[in-house]
Length: 192
Image 1 (cartoon, rainbow, N blue to C red):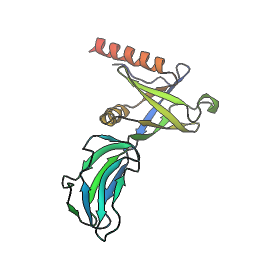
Image 2: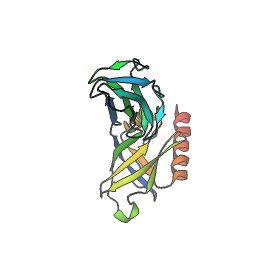
Image 3: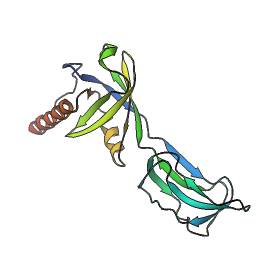
Image 4: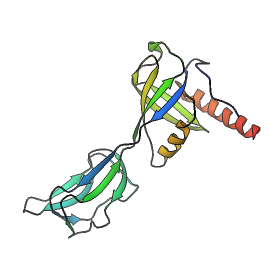
């Protein structure tokens, strides 16, 4: 089996340990008793954009009806199965949970590098078996990169598993990242 301990073997390769942060979740609940006027237009696992209408409600005290709006982009992790027209929501009842698609990570480098080589807002790449994840550099120090990426619903588990490796390489060029991951996959299968 091939070990990915290539500390800056080639220009544009940054070897290190990647530590992922769990995606954040937003909880939507009712602070006051309300009545559901229209059934939710979203289901578990679906994507919602910031500003999407989740459900329309009528406050108990005769206030004007209004829509409950998503505060950020993400995937629906939970929708209460009670939310149908006419349902009386109790104060404190959870209505929705939206999981962010943005993942934050720290890439602790094996070696120091010169700061002009990498800069904030630059894209670096993490690849595994012909799949490439673009990672935006959010902050740079001499020993680490703080990066973020947006993932699809099932991709977090793949990234989490990949981050368990003792060392990973981030690449400044997508084609080099993909070429190396395909080569490593073929060498690994040849050894097996």
